[in-house]
Image (spheres, rainbow, N blue to C red):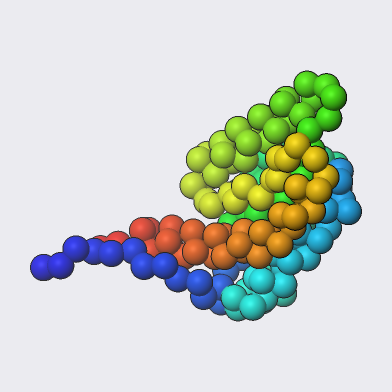
Length: 154
């Protein structure tokens, strides 16, 4: 008998994926969300199976992610935000709350909740990382398929 192996699978057919993006710093997050949505389509996720939601900021992403992940037709959630360091401690509180809340949403629901929140020291660093968003789609599809494979192990 050989080991049972969970293989990487980037086939998005039949998967429901939500993309939740923060409106704060939307000159960055809108581009990121669009790249993630386009990549989901390339991976075979049907337009009708993609739910797009905006939240006011990165702090609010975890609640939206949790509610979406609770839905039966959603297999994965991608959270997109951009928290850029300023001159106050606000950055630390928002970045920490978003990080912890997004991780907890995935843990609590048992569904992949992808952390696509940029946390940078300046706008230039955030803009330079916009194109990473297509990788969030890859992660969502891969993880949703892996969770299904784990569930179907015999």
